[in-house]
Image (cartoon, rainbow, N blue to C red; front, side, top):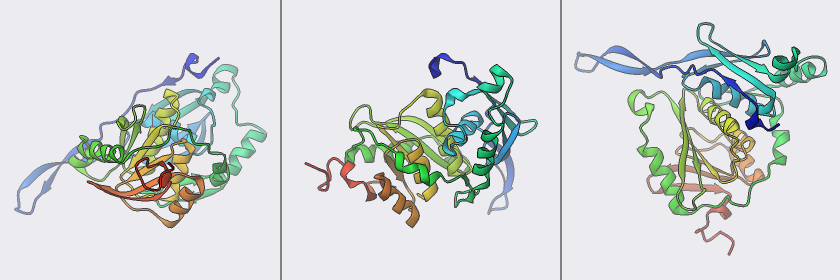
Length: 294
């Protein structure tokens, strides 16, 4: 039975991204302003507490799925039966198919010990809102296999930048958020925006996109990932987990992010603004570059 043939029960409990507040401006006048929400959301897998994320709350179900995927706590969406968000308790209950169909949790005996070991290997990252990576994820990255259709042109790079800049964003209204966007290159040279997510931390935004990709059964081979945040080792790891070969940012990068991208053969663009960019790794994928293979 395929994933698409099995029912995944999802709540639809996204929150409004902003609240209105009064503020005194520089002229002494009261103005109504919009500010971003920020809410704790605790993830439970078969009633076992995993982590509490601080989130905008607009895509909580996809955020939970993407977090499980990118942390490799669950390696197949087929193992999940339900994702139910309850803002009254600020929690999301993820139920495995084993518990839903057979009345027993996956996390017993050796499986519980393995999960404990993964959760015990905790690294606090540089992500805004303080991201966390569990387990030795770097040891799994050497298995990444990129597809054959990962090239893009300079015009495609500019198109991604232009589409992100022209998008109607929460940041323009209220600030205080990061954005991530996913583009398809199914039509060469014409990137199509598939998904745009904003959250209080870039790691949440990328996880929400990862969860959506998981639900849709999307391969990352011909996709481009864009983030407004800096390109750290965490962002490279998550991009590699999603099998996306091209990573772009309007911000800068870190030394470890660069080293990992180079090691993995990932194409990394930074400082993408207007008609400017800096291509740090994977220049062979830029099809109209003098470094591209003939």
